[in-house]
Length: 294
Image 1 (cartoon, rainbow, N blue to C red):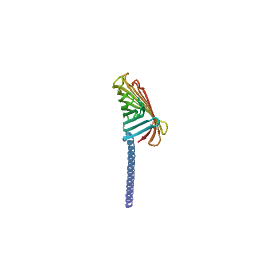
Image 2 (cartoon, rainbow, N blue to C red):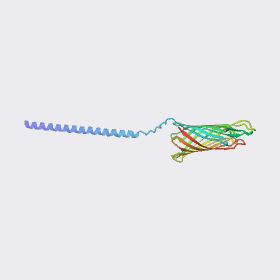
Image 3 (spheres, rainbow, N blue to C red):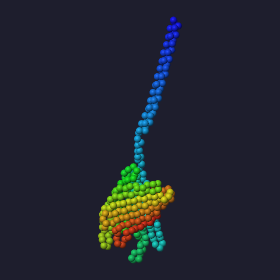
Image 4 (cartoon, rainbow, N blue to C red):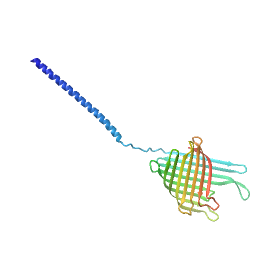
């Protein structure tokens, strides 16, 4: 009887321990599976949340940059006749964010022997001309395709029909074409022009103010690794048909000699529709200068 009771008690105790152990293992497996699912679930959520975040393209603001160049060309001749020619100029470019400002100053000076009515020869100035042009562009989009501009121009030429000429203009422009080797800009807008005519034997000095439409185009192309072609055209069209119109075209070929020194060939056409009777409407200028970039 005692053996049967002992055997039965031992059997029940073994079954209870085995059941408890099986339950603990099942419970541990369930907890481990839940942890794995939680890790997998969290990983998927993290991945999905990272994918759901939109890629924000922030425009990097470029630092202010100032670059420039200075050019100089000089020719002096002595002997039977004396003459001297000098051409110099400065170009400055300032760029920061959507703003771009350009400043160009040019000076031309010529001197030669002049024979007066009494037969005496004097070394005098035969031409003196200086020009200032400034333009500021503001880009309207991130791709810098469209921009608005403001332009100021002043010119004084001692031996022309004018004491000085100046204009202001503002309007809209666009970067029409861009590739690795070429670019084309063009802008158009209304403006205001003032021509100060010299006094003549028939008319006194007079000043003519008129509204204009200004159109500009600039084409730049690389002809080689160290050669660049630049073509600039500017037209100031008066609204009145009887007023003076100004058309300028300049072709420039620049060859790099060293990293900061270039040789520059420039051919310029300058046309005024209203000049004195003894003056030509078209002036041409050819120059070869050395350019130092900084």
